[in-house]
Amino acid sequence: MTTDTEEKIVVLVNGIPASGKSTLTRALAEHFGFPVLTLDSLKEPFMASFAPVDRLRNRQLGCAAYQAIWQVVAQAPTRCIYVIDAWFGFQPKEVLQQGLQQAGVTRVLELWLAITPDEAVARYQARLTDRMPGHPGAEYLPELRKLAETAQPMALGPVLQLNARNPDQAAACAWLQRQLRLPISAQPALSASG
Image 1 (cartoon, rainbow, N blue to C red):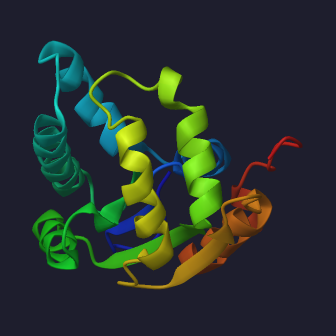
Image 2: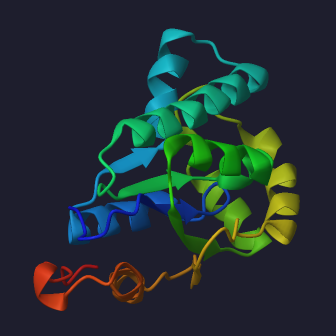
């Protein structure tokens, strides 16, 4: 989907690991029809090819996938709006700013999924067996707890903070619609499950 503006806009779905970014991203993509880029979808095929992947290689692949995201956005038409699902705080903010600049992004909107340390640890632990080998395992839980205590949005544009425990998808869609100045009639209805 595109807007009538010539701005190049990205919607960052941001939050620490296990905060619910993927679920929210899918809901936004379904509602608006925007294309999606996720750090894991770019990284995981390479993780499978280079298995076994240790923590250092995982980080290297994450950095490469991050750069690939901005390459894709740079090649997109100006009016294309991407929803980008990633934990943007895994690198310095300056790296994000540089990627946005190289991609020609003129406007950044951010949905921040705030999560408590206990909830983050519980969610991450519950999905350990479902994650592709090469992602950090149970040894990451103390680090994740500390991260949850200090993590903040990137705040390079307007930010909507959502409670990760029960993010209001309808409110997120309404906020984005207002930020993008899209007419209500141009949007499909949010599904009852959303």
